[in-house]
Image 1 (cartoon, rainbow, N blue to C red):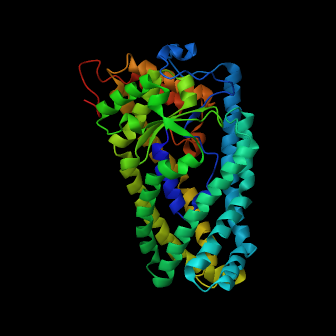
Image 2 (cartoon, one colour; image 1 turned 180 degrees about the vertical axis):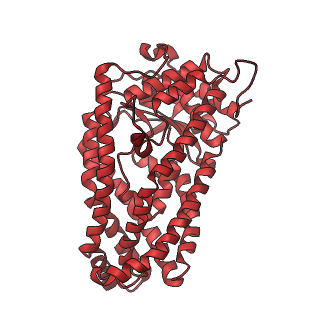
Image 3 (cartoon, rainbow, N blue to C red; image 1 turned 120 degrees about the vertical axis):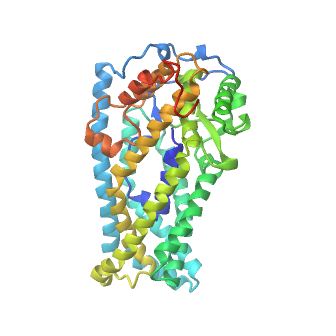
Length: 454
């Protein structure tokens, strides 16, 4: 269930690659299953091929004692790594300033060429690569923990190759953003925050559009879902039609996730012509067709309820405020420490580290707010999923509850998270709440209808 999170991911990139220091172990958007070998269903497999456990009646989200203890330990790891990685990321930026790496890369760029774009082409990749290498220990520890808890099966060679490809993508995006940023700063020292904000909006939309077409295939293999599971494709098409969306079978895809993870996921992504539904092969192996349709119905909710434009509007307003605060404070920060860091002015490429430090601090402060907004949207999508599958799926509330139970079990979701955990690490409602809502939401009991689907 990732479509909404992609909006915020795009937003974080446009905040000057703030994801370099953002917590990287926040609660996963998709769910994962225990480490085990799965037998993939043949094309066109019927729902009966799903595991027998998926048919158990669910009345509440519960776990056996050993699994409960395991999720409790993992929850502590998540919260600890969130705090450590956040502080560590900010420290890395501070050390980058103290070690004067920015001025060193700037001098290399200026000696190599007097052309602005060539200078940016030298400076930006060096900046992105260095900050990412310095923050790599937290990424390695995260992957180690995912493997330790059976959420990932990806080997270190494959993981390193994915990291390298990600660095290439980040370097390209970094070059574009840094070029635009410093072009507008040098052109308009007082109004750059507004001009850069205006330039960032179409870039964010473009990124959301091209991600499923260009970026995702760099990391995973996609094939037409109709060739892998025609019955599932037909069920998804029926749900999409009821939702009033235009996602034909040609834009429904199977993804080979099992070569890297034991996670489960089915999601909608993209905009316009790039809009599509993606179902992981691990999901097909673990969930039956009605349960996968329930997940996809949730994703349709994000589109139908306009969560993408709403989330984008919130990002736009928030980033405008952040850029303005950055503009107001960067001058003060450079007046205080700029000479010691060998940063000449705001228009100096080397000032990007100081600006990113400010923006990162603001972004960290806003984590509880962005999580709360995301939880609200996700709850609405849960409600929409129940409504759009009502009548299409027999006993859709129980199917949704079963789905959340499985997702919670395989993703090792702790049943009893505390308020601080929810505030800091949950961008979806806790599984216990999602199960209870699924079971009690019944506007049709007395002849009524759903709020979103009549």
